[in-house]
Every structure is written in C-alpha cells, then in structure tokens.
Image (tube, rainbow, N blue to C red):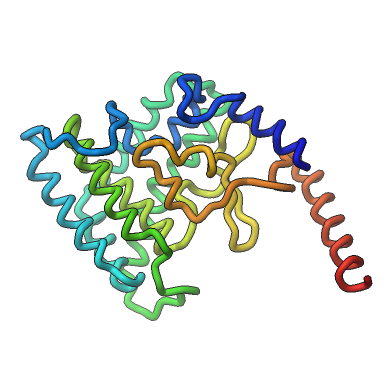
Length: 263
C-alpha cells in the first residue's frame, strides 16, 4: 500500500512541494483562497484608502466572531454578516473563480466549477436556512472545533493584506461561508467530490473527511487547509476505481473479523 501511496502522490504532485516554483497551478487555484500578490502574511499597514471603511467593518465582525465559544453564539453572527451581501456578490465570486481557472484543461475545470458552485451557493443556502430556523437544533457537538480563534485571526490578517491590493469584502464572505462549513457543520472547507489533479477528490467515509492535498497545502498563505477537519487521503481511499476499492474494503472487514473475533 505504501508503494501505491507514493505513486499516487507523485501523480498528483510530481516531485514538487507547494513551495516549489513548479507547484501545480490547478491545485493553487483551489487552496489559494486569498490570492494576494505578495506572499508575506504580515500586513504592511498600507491599506488602500478606498477600502479602509470596508476593512474596519470586516475586522470588527471577525473580532466579535472570535469571542464565540459555541455554535449557538457563532451561527447568528455568521448569518447576519453573510446576509449583508447581495446575491450578486455570490455570482461575482463564481465569475472570479471561472476567470481564475480559464487556462485549466476543460476535463478537469468543468467538475471543479461544479464543486465550487456548491461551495458558494449551496453553502450560502444552508447557512441562511439554518440561521433563520427558530426551532431546536440537533448538533452532534455544540462546541467549536479547536483552532477557531486562530482561524478568525488568520482571516483578519488575510483581509488586511487583501485591502492593500483590492476590496476585501468578497474575501471575507468566502471565509464566512467556509467558517460555517468547517465550524458549524464540522465539514471540509471544500465540499465532498471537489476534484484534484490525478483523479482524487475530497471524500467522506462516515464522519471522516479525506482530502488528497491536506498535508501539502499548509504553506499557502491564508489557505483554509490548516483549519479544515479533513485528513490526508490514505490507504484504500487512494484507489480511484470504486469497484476495486469496495473489494479491498470488504476483504479488510473479513480479515479484521477473523483476526480479532475468530482468532
């Protein structure tokens, strides 16, 4: 299995790490959320005058959100913040990503755009629906996952850096939608079935989410990856053929049964 893992890693990444100049641009399009020109994660303090008021509003929201200690406190803050954005902003997010991926081969770009559409519009719908629901919520866990405070701090830095180049409003919306997915729903930052080069994708197995680039994207500034609950794709999840994967899983269950229960 280790040999399979190595070959699939090479297929996705080649021999390159994200910090290499040859790092695959198809992967960058997904994990590089902030898309800031400068790779320095510390703000320079040179916010463009046109975006100062917007940045102050955004920073105030994320500093308030940072104090949340459970989902009941965070959910209304997120829904109120996202509700400030008109539907046109969601469409603009989609247009921006379409432009960002225009040079990617169509056979990969088309399913990727489908996943991004879900990431934007479906997540927005779920957040607005749950935010307006007045009944009892049945969360498996009401506490926020570890790392939430750090996530809010990261977003404040990312939006400040963005305001040194462009309007940070859409970026804040992107992070707010991802925050709902990762810290209210406890799901991955990119939805299940988001494809990556090499034929692998984000997957769910029970309550565990797998991502083929989870351990390879932490060095991208302001990425969602370090805060995502998904784990690196390993083992049988590296097998692309669903029938072959099912066969190996069934065999593993049988082997486990005879090893641990029938000694």
